[in-house]
Length: 269
Image 1: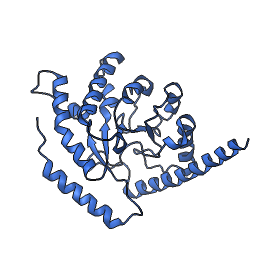
Image 2: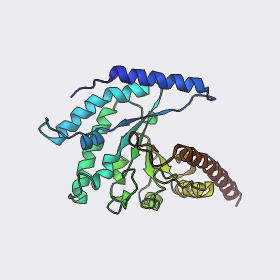
Image 3: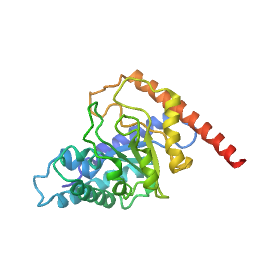
Image 4: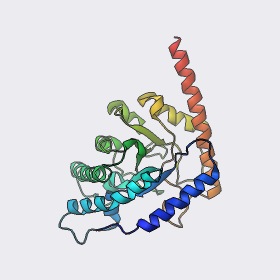
């Protein structure tokens, strides 16, 4: 196992840097570049060579290390996509017990931590995903069953689905599982499978739930997943996606204003 995409990666990062510089955003732009985790690669590319899954994960981690480090060295935020930690439960581990699944994903987190050992956690975030598709999702693993393992990963930011109907209630998980001081949450407050445009007030309400549990300074607004998770597959029309993102921005503004007012009132109570 070895990484062979060095030149292609360098060209893509250079193109992205040029685009960011062309936009001319005020101040340093925090641009995120996603990359597949060792664990999710092992889901879609089956091991047909190594003696064990653990050995395969170790080889994947070592191969992906160069991609992760190159992204950060280019000045971007690394987002490691980790659907293996959640979607993997009803995919390749559907017949396993919850304890067997927990053991499996603990190994995936260990591989991710090894692959990112040289990267500052502040320059990383990870995306926890139950699969970005419109379906029943009634076999999704509960966040409460895996949250301790997920929070053991090195990236500081943790993105999680918080808009779709199967996981919108899980802000309450952090009442029983306090967020470590070195972590930030990026709850998805916009669904990426439907063409409904969420009202900004609903976005603000979703953000406020998390902020009241883990702290205002440790919550950032995000989307449940990507609007085009698979190549040439766009369930949300691009114009609608932009409208949803506009609602996300406005909702985040409303949440910020509301939470600041609450803090002022509380300070004078």
